[in-house]
Image 1 (tube, rainbow, N blue to C red):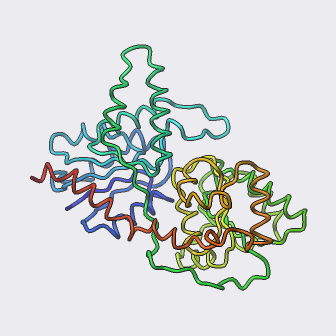
Image 2 (cartoon, rainbow, N blue to C red):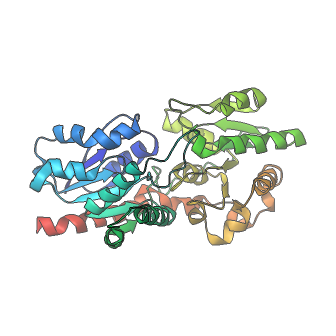
Image 3 (cartoon, rainbow, N blue to C red):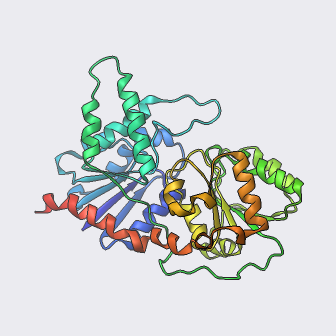
Length: 366
């Protein structure tokens, strides 16, 4: 098939997903993008931009669009020649945690809802995200003064699937055992430098461990955007003797090399609908320490939750101290989760995407 991929926010995990699907799919996928900034304006204006970039929309068997655009605008502008559309939710504006001094714009959330209704198929990137979306959407619709279209949510559910985003590493790419040449364990932070990843909690716990005399090094990886939380400036001073690298690594090989040297990858996020960066680190041999919320419980086997998942700040501190000082104390079956992480590679998952796209396009092609 010939597929057109529309990505209004081409950066971070959005970019990684688009490149991964394009690289591994059996089908021919063309990507149209906009830079990863001004996301509210993307939701309002991306459709106008994209429709002018498409000489003949009927040349495609399928449109694959992501959530930071108004699909109703796009389909209206495209007209009757528009092929079937699969709509993919990286995040949604109904339940995304607000930053400091932000106020919820329910108009943007309703744009997500009506776009899902207009799509021929809807994909969420985790079970948690799907359930969170429908809970928030139902709350929003019930706030309408009359003519509440709860039936619309039922219609969306009927065409909804959960497909985990593929990670861009080969399924058989084993971690490099003994890759670390460091005299202390390396803690990996490979998330966006933004408030929704809750860096304050991460550095607060690390500060207490340092005062206890727990030795570690720190790799502050991940992308930075326009506004960087001030806690990173303080952390650079507090942990100047521990930080070995900071900032996004453009080279995939260099990035993987740092993961290979890591002992533990930590998340303190208050927003995460999957967790690609965590699974990338686990695939390279890092032990995950993850909160008991969001999508994280889905990412590790239930039998490993007692070792991997924490419920509180105190729990994070105790688990992190344990993995830094006595990693062999954990269940042997959970010390090496790299093989489990291989199940999230694009090689392992892409057939699910191709199969869904083929089903959606088939009635039109036939």
